[in-house]
Image 1 (tube, rainbow, N blue to C red):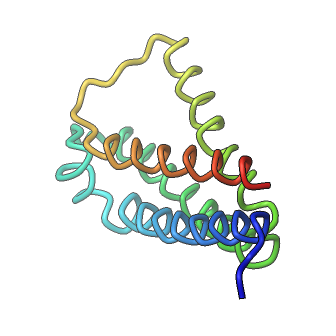
Image 2 (image 1 turned 135 degrees about the horizontal axis):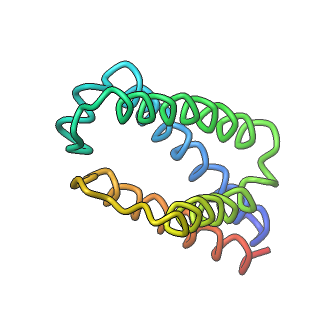
Amino acid sequence: MRMTGNAQAVAVSRNVLFVLAAVDLIRAIMHTFFLNWAALNVARIDPHPDALMLLGVFGNSNFLTAGVFALIAWKARDLAGYVLGIIPVAYGLGILGIRLNGVSMQSDFNGQYMMMVYFAVCIITFLYFIRRR
């Protein structure tokens, strides 16, 4: 049985959102339970207590996004494609706010490369979703 363009777009978006939920769960665990290791080996930031606290708080929000993404993919799959479009916009607004306050990175923040792939997957899947709907 062949899926229609709309059904296929929803299925692809739903599956991608499930994968992103798993990625966010891994990020949450790294930013909280393996905080010191991730700060030193992935982000390569100075393990100052304030920086670690902020990294940990970010991990808390990753638990939330992992749960919300999984719930949307499972129970509200028709919204998955739209959520994929919202994700890079939300992060973009956050980055804009940070830059408007004159904050710039001093450390390697190697996680940024994984996040570029994360955003690219969101954008490509969102465009596919919109085109096929």
